[in-house]
Length: 528
Image 1 (cartoon, rainbow, N blue to C red):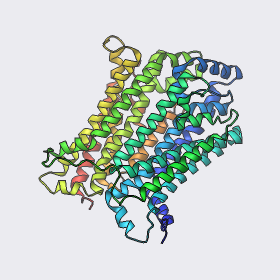
Image 2: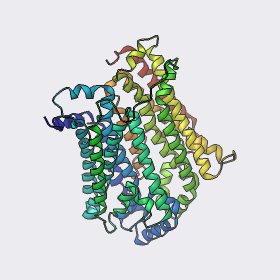
Image 3: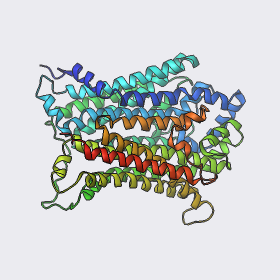
Image 4: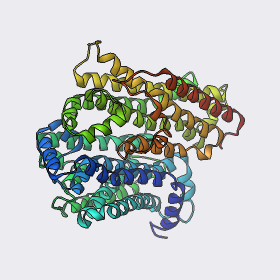
């Protein structure tokens, strides 16, 4: 038996388990990219408009930090500029989720030890996880290349391969982190932190230089993606950087995997105190989820600061472009341009907050399937009391991160300490996103409580809502499509009129969904 015996079987098993998650994440990413050329053609329909955009970006350091520099005025080059950084980040998230799910998650649950007792090589599980991430990114590359080939085959291939390179690179990063940590949650968090650091390095470098030549930009894989320059004189040698980094990180992951026992790690979890300090199920839930809440809180606060600081520059960029202004109005309402931009950015953070609440609610599912819930429930702890601790963190945490996002916007706008005309509406606009976020959380509770095997499908729901809210306005989707998302019914604040009816209806719907999920949890068997 070799170290890779059983890799094919484990790969097929991994793809079968991820038959919903991988297609949804890949489809969202591909549609985001492929919807952009048509939008850009309608926004900048003449060479003069595109040349003017390039001149504005050369002098707008804040927007370069957010999106990246522009290297060409063709529709293909503008597409790579507009969505490249975010599509690369989404590909990286897909890769890290797949790898951690099939490595450290499996070891934490005890399934890896069971599988290893069969005819399975020592490195088969890790190889299968990396191959599953590779399949996901290969499909993304093929979709992007085929969809953009009409704009130029070379540029399409460079962009597709660059996105796949970022995704696979962070998959191998996750493979290394999974060997270092004993917790799947910590592995995901640390890899996400590396991705965040890559984004910050690229943003700092791009804000300093408009040609992407800053050393800080070259320290980031996201900077490599933009310096590949699809549709702007492709630098094919940059793909060699991806290949070298992937090969090096894969080798490191294999060496580390061969030097530890199943279930162990190089950074073991610190043992707790000799006597317990957690006196309730709610305290246990807070302890388990405090890291995730802290990470999301910091991220939303920083995002608010960044978007708040970009408000004036972004408003100036689209002020003279009627079609760009129309897209912002479909996202943020028909108010002043500054308020419209704020409303659209706050709405985008609300969409992202739905990912937080899905992950937080599904922590219940993870505790149950791993067998950790059963010892807790064997004590004088009822199911509803156990679930309530996690749901309080999920729904209350969503309110916390949106409030911190509002404080971040005020900081970026320079309104901290000013409770005048702008501060109140900005905070209110952030908090009004909560009913829609809670509906997504309520649907997750319903799936978990009534059909736990389908609970991971909540990620697909969150991805669909994100796609509708992000791509729908750019494509001028019909109102019936936009209304499929709970976010489509919220008032457009700041700048618009406050409408209490949809807010109350969505809040009531969230309460009903949670109640239905908890009723199902009381009646069904606990997974053993």
